[in-house]
Image (cartoon, rainbow, N blue to C red; front, side, top):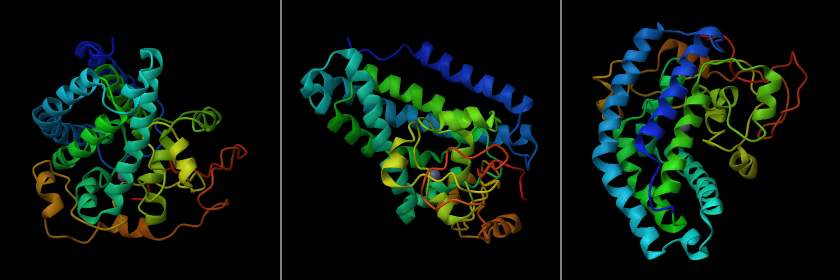
Length: 304
Ligand SMILES: [Zn+2]
């Protein structure tokens, strides 16, 4: 039952539909003031996406698809040993994949050479749904052994893998989007799921804020590890101020950015990299229940 993935057309329609709805909402109720013209950014980020999609199609899909089928046929991995019904196995696989992706995300920040590739995602000057897909193709290729280990150890079936992948894409499109949700709704959502204001803090130019909110789906992992931060005043991010590096605005420069000579960060990034006063709240703790009007979350107007 779980040996067949979701139909490609279904997963594609869900992801494309989510992207289209978010683009529409970003026009209607933006959360942050954009720095660059939308069309220009969209074209640039989609060019980076085309490259990384081709890399995934050529490397991850031929490797992980068959591996997942093999794991299911041979009953390898935790969930296969447990021999759970599909209705339990698939959600559990999604949760465990989400947790192990949290660990991978931490590594991409902590290991210097991985950070050089992940930085391409973080140096986007604005933050919107297109940023969600802006990853250096090498980062995606480098992550394949990790993905293979996830599938092998957890025992992820093809159906569970495709459900997790689709849910992940929907989640990252959503929490990178520049959509202003009603604050009361977002405070409720963030108890369980990563939201735009929460993830905006991760894209901060201040290191203490970038080293937080690593979850990609459920906020539980940041809560468990004490890395959840919601106590940050309004600020835009995305200028990559943590470790100033190459600033690949042109798609042609993006592939070489991780190995290019470092340049000084843009002036706006240096300005934004200064520690900002916190409104209140202790570092590393969740502050979900603030009163309206004390919006201590990133998501305000851009500083540069
Ligand atoms: Zn990151």
